[in-house]
Image (cartoon, rainbow, N blue to C red):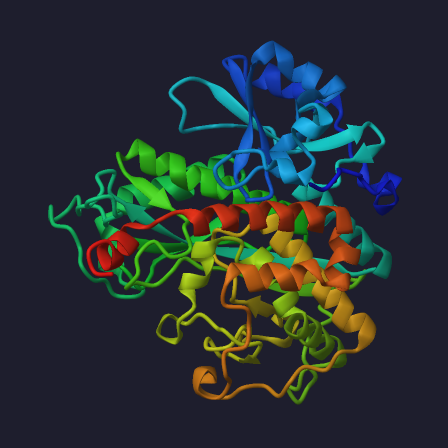
Length: 470
């Protein structure tokens, strides 16, 4: 069993961002109807946890913080504390103070009762962020970019499935069309007809998101029945980009429930259909607002872009366990579903791990295409930016750009299972330096115990194959 020891040297006073009570006072005055407030923490699995408090507790939360268990950051995917992390009974199942994230207080428009929501971050005390809070980990990485005079610009793309509340013998199934009354068995990518099938629900998602200040953009029908993709507009605030992603997932789930449907961000819910990917677009701007990735006049990538690509690709195996954090995550990887399994890049090439989309030089960016929507956006962003910084500082050259089908030109070489991916992360000195060795130990320990439990479970398939045959 590991013993919890936070390395306070990882943080500085710049990482402490306590809110002003004026935000709460102003919000309550503007919204006298609000009865309750949901206080939201995102755990290391990307799952929102927290508590619901009464209206009169809000100003106290801003002024003095709200106590929540440290073990939230040592939980497995089931919400059970993993004692081997040292964040549970060993330290008395103790609490830490959580303070509001400034600017994230908003109304939950889908609720029947007037309820607001508020993102929180955990602190060991008023001067020290909690080492295992994903927002704090990303904040530490962003501080390093700030010292370099560079600001990341980013935008997430999320894929998800609408599913029927009624399962098919325990398996998910697409919802019945509200237009035809039939259950779809296939779909067409970018089909407007498929969008029309669930037009009211999809419109409500965008409307609810905008009511919360989330910059949701387009929704497209993806390559499987009931699968859609929604894009967020890019922002030069990487933390806000992740906040928006977490909150948008919550909006999608709640709106689906209001329409008597369910939704899933599971990486691979159907064995014979495409999985759910979460792509992110990243560029960097300098203090004058210039894109440091901007291509030269001849269209060739400049040094900074090449080195960023080199860092992201060379370190990809080391942060694979963050992009693909669950056993199911690795079932997405298949060439016919455009999921890359080797560290490749190319211009306007969707068969590669990293894609440079076409466009004007000022809009040059990297699209990272490996993660599923089961990844934690904060940890994903932290890992990608850390690898970019590593590549730029060490001038890591990428391999040659791939033209054509990358799947026929490169052999699968990335970790293809959770155990191997965790082993790579556990031994990565660069990830430990950027994200914190203490956090890496907690993350890997929790996921290893989760994997052990999964492997001890006897599946229905095993009974089908072996019970009466061996």
